[in-house]
Image 1 (cartoon, rainbow, N blue to C red):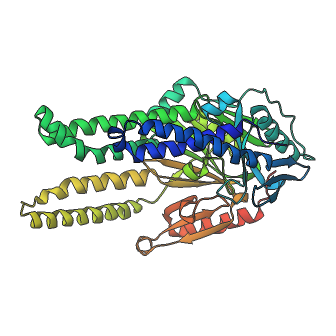
Image 2 (image 1 turned 120 degrees about the vertical axis):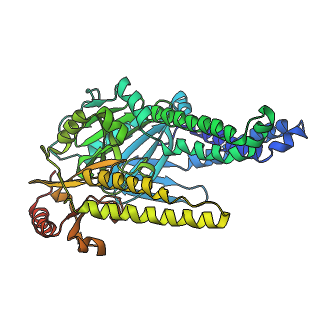
Image 3 (image 1 turned 135 degrees about the vertical axis):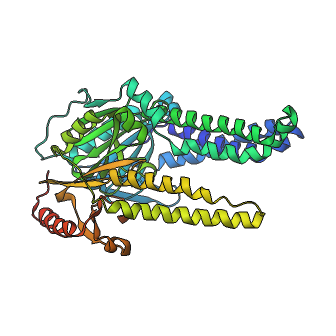
Length: 475
């Protein structure tokens, strides 16, 4: 099988356009001195597109792929020939993505993701839209051949669809940090344009800074909302065979799968705004790479946003884990958090005192009052949002205030256990139990029951250890 012929001019124009953009932005000043510069750049763009087209024609001619009963075979290379055979059982996801221009041209990009990797095992740039769907379906069927599976209906109703109301709430309550980077860029420009505006409208620089700062922050929030809207528009989640499959996106449409056999744990996440309105997000962490955006967002999103009750129902549908009741940590752990934040406040006060000495200004000792109050509030919030629950087949942990995460981990997914006690925890007879799974997260991000009673932690360690040793892997 071959790639789409449309991929030749598309990739050529895309590459030439990148060169044109770099040339234009690197020579903005030249435009005012050389009227023919823009025409010259346009000529370079068309000549470059033609030359690059010849190269991508050779790439297309020497690229072929085939799906056998056991492998996904790819042959490629213009100068250096390569042949790759990817075992089907290692393929975790067949993700399809289409930008708005690719949708107009009827082509799509396919990423083949395998367990244990953080990058794509192979990419097909680009195939016809219908062929992309056939490849996704064919790989799924061959992987499940011989297994007792349900008949897959491609036209079945989704188990979850993001409503317009939920999409609006998601856009307004979830921050997209990439989009918010425009705030920091804008703040960098503030120092350059602020004095000029100050001279033009005769305002103090502080007034200008406040006005422009407000505009920049508002623009960042709007950009964040627009980014979430574009990413999760018309989000649908299907249960097909032995995997969850999703579709999402307005301008850039994406389709991917999350195999049940690769799911390590579930994560119910809520920021303060979402908790206030009674909403939550459901994410799944898989072994190895999890979906095409894994490098950016961590666990794959199964439900972008829904009412908390609905999220818990879908979580139960995936794992059948039943109900749970998170129990809090000992009250003495509050002393640990308060002492930590108070120490940080003392350091800040010391820095403030040093700054007043250098600038010969008056030191205000009452600054400790709001810092102490803030330390107490922060310690209380950390204390009340931390806890765990030991179930018969699952272990539950909860941590975080700004992003409260409730993790649901099956015992049969646990790879290792760690019982740790820091110097400060030993003084208060506290311990932390860390569950290591086969997910991509570093050890510090694994599900953990933090600051539980030391004796309880030791007994819990033994019981959880026996539970994951005796548990059998589910199909």
